[in-house]
Length: 368
Image 1 (cartoon, rainbow, N blue to C red):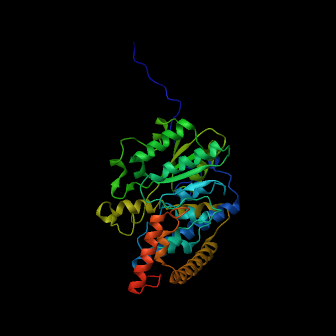
Image 2: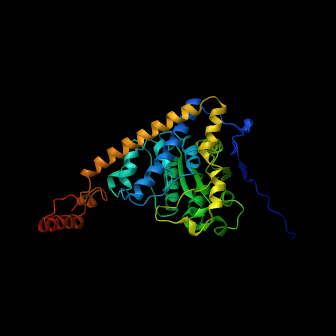
Image 3: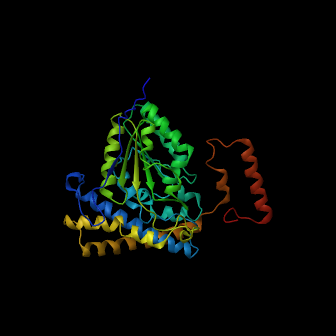
């Protein structure tokens, strides 16, 4: 029998709408209300300045290790802006701008990064999962949520975030395969920031794009300029509509860059050059978006300066409130709570033994 080519029904597109010079491909411009555009700008700016403040706090020993987000704000904010409150987001650990957009107080981020459980508490009215540190494990959780929503006949969507390193994990492939087989309403947002800690993207996979991995699992895939908020917004809008209509999942590869350290325990100078970083600084998503808003007559230098002042005041207020709140936190007995709906007997015994030991050494139940 002759050898014949298998024709695949899909191909991978790359989407860019607003380049680093602020030049716009007008036919592709998404219809975003002016008030939403301004809110997106403020959230990006707030997240960037808060990120800078967190780095300062960490270097002063006032918070623990955390992962900076500088350079990646558009890659997750443009996606999450499409969602409804009833939709779910399933983050990794570098989606702070998305958290803020969804209503997370700045104080809780500070408290969380000081190691207090209270900082990770999510109100019942927010369909957000907590930060996931194990690389790629949360993608399976998103698929499970999406399957549950489909099973219940709801048109809500689960959106999972992860980095390029997660695409080297088995969890990623299992999740996409399940999503393809069962056509679940999931949107997978890969923030391809070029580095999985110190491993470059070129050493993770031989494929030309990460988006094309979607084709192997029978779901839609697209690669976008992840520093172009408009492109991310447009791609996410299309993906969410696809999911709501019952047409299945989408993998969005956002090509972006981590301009700062992987975490504050990392030294990126050991594995990448400053010239590479500077090249990406010229593609800064905030500067680019500000040029776009200025061209639309929605923003000028005076308005940017006023916004800068406002976000700095908001950040300072959050730092003061968080540091005051943390004075009353740290009860070690909380480690026994929230693992079970009804505490099992063995855990009750351990809790009582802990209380007895505290009493023996003069512990007061807090900061002991």
